Image 1: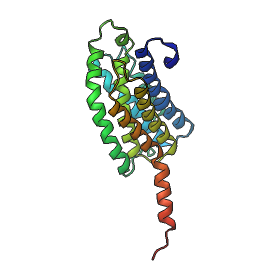
Image 2 (image 1 turned 45 degrees about the vertical axis):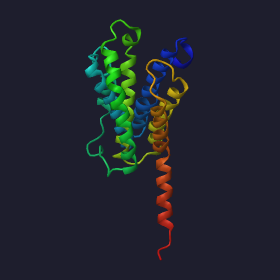
Image 3 (image 1 turned 60 degrees about the vertical axis):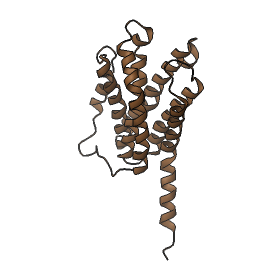
Image 4 (image 1 turned 120 degrees about the vertical axis):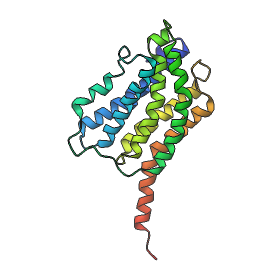
Length: 216
């Protein structure tokens, strides 16, 4: 709704970014894990996404008022059965993709948190827009890292990768608003998202080719 409803461009991008975090990262992971308790990858992504909200709200001083703690608390009743929550050997491709996402988050998050902290009665601060954008950048890095240490899941890779792709696309579409990230970083998010989304398919194809390659 933020894409279409608001006449002010900055409201569109702020609301859209918030929608990506909740509707493409956190909520799908929770739904997938609830319907399939064996999909521990979905659980790891849900936790990483929720943690990002708390991490960015602490320095902003809005932990309680922003309700950033609510998604994490919501996960408590869904805690995995004993012995099912596990991590796997790292997927080094996804670990490598996480590095530029962490660098990008480190570049933009401090400024956004400062804007949130100093926003006063500004409407964007009152709606926790700056904090929400910072949370998405942190979440994309944490969720990709969670994928790197979780059992491979094409569905969750599509959600996380698709979120990064949309983040890049919207910043390329609306580069002139005040909180926009530079074109180079927007392109970086788009490319990293594509790698995350398609990597399980590429890895599976590569593994299949190795499996059926005759031994000389």
